Image (cartoon, rainbow, N blue to C red; front, side):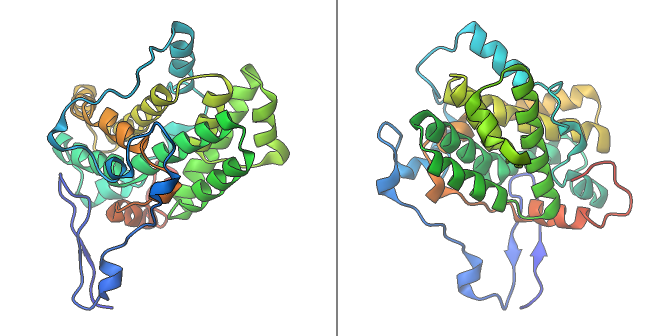
Length: 288
C-alpha cells in the first residue's frame, strides 16, 4: 500500500490519497435494508445525509413537558457524574499538531464529527436502543449494545464510551432506579454511552427526539470544552463555536432518527487516527 496522507480542513475531516490503494478500499459502503425502516420514520435515503439547503427541520411533533425537560437537563448536564471532562475524543493530539488552533478550525472539526463520525453513529445507537426498549425487544437491545461497544475504533474511544455509559447508568440507578435498567447493568456490565442514555430515556418515558438532541448537544459541548482548555480558547470563543454549531445539530439528529443499525457507518478517518496517536502522545491531559 502506498503513502496515505490525511488532510484536515474546516469543511472536511479527511481525504485519503493513495496511488496504490485498491479501489474497493477507497470507497466503503455500509449495508442498508430499506425493509427494516420502522413505519413512521422517514425513508432510508434521508438517513444517508443531511437535507440540502440547511433549512430548519422539525425533529418532533410532541411538546416535551417540564418534568421531562428537567430530567434531560440533569442527565446531560456537565455536572452529571460520567467523567466527560476527562475525554477529548482525540482532539488533544490534533491541537498539538496545530491542525485545530482557533474557532474556525474547531468548528470544522466538530461539524465533521457530528456529520461523519461518532456524533451521527451515537445518535443512531441511542435511537435504536430507545425503540428496542420501548418495544420490549431485549434481543435487539443486546444487538445494539454489542455493536455500539464494538464500533469504537480505538482502545481510548472504547474506554470513552464504555466508562461514560457505565457511569451514567450507575448515577441514574442511584436516583431513578428501574428494574429494566438494573438488568442492563447487571453483573458489572459495561454499556456504551448512547445505549445507556437511550435505555434510560425509554424506561423513564422521555421523548426520543429531544433526548437525542440533548445527547448530540452534550457531545459537541464537551469537545468545545476540551478545546477551551487545550488550544486554549477564551470562554467567549467557546460560546461562538457552540453558536455556529447550533443550526447543524438538529439536522444531524433528524437524519439519524431516520436510520436503522444497517445505516451505521462513519468516515471521520482523521478523528480515528487522532485517537490512535493520542495513545502514545508524550504529554496528555485527557484520557482520549
